[in-house]
Image 1: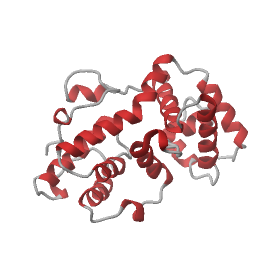
Image 2: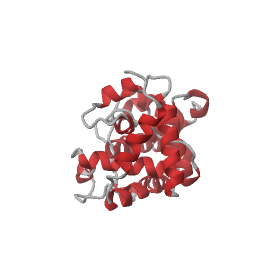
Image 3: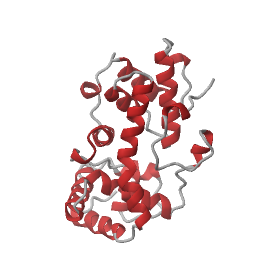
Image 4: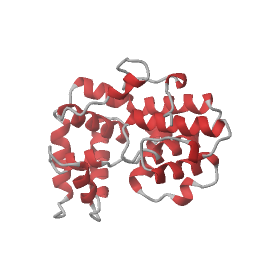
Length: 231
């Protein structure tokens, strides 16, 4: 990928922002508070620490949708609570991600000492600290928006992330827009993420049918309604 100027990314991000709807803003503004509250509920229900629960959740996020992520997390939380091993867990993402999540949950591995990837550490920071977080989770959708591409695949976007400057440039553009709009960087990112998913017809709520049959993608989910995967 040709390296673009910071202005190129800023222009595309601002152009996308002009297209977001009121519903995009409403859903995006509640996204991280919803993650926070849902994960806090799980940590209380399963009697695990809130920070390790968040760390396990973000470790499970690669190649996983939100609700598959929650079900995978509950698979680990329930097994840990009942004194089982990770080998007994069924998850919907890579086993290596599950192994890492189990290590953070059990306290055998320190997330902050071990993890250096900016996307996953930003995701953790955004969920834990909400509006106080000054970091931006730059995922494939944000890369596609910054490049002005409506048909970029996530594989192509992840390849573009290997550029030495694109993460900094996109993060700076989102932070500047957040200052302009008087909101948090993670809220701007979540609003744009919601907008892209909606305009491309990428559903965000289908997995909820596995829980209650209701469409509650943007609501806090009671812990007892999130079922673990069964082997």
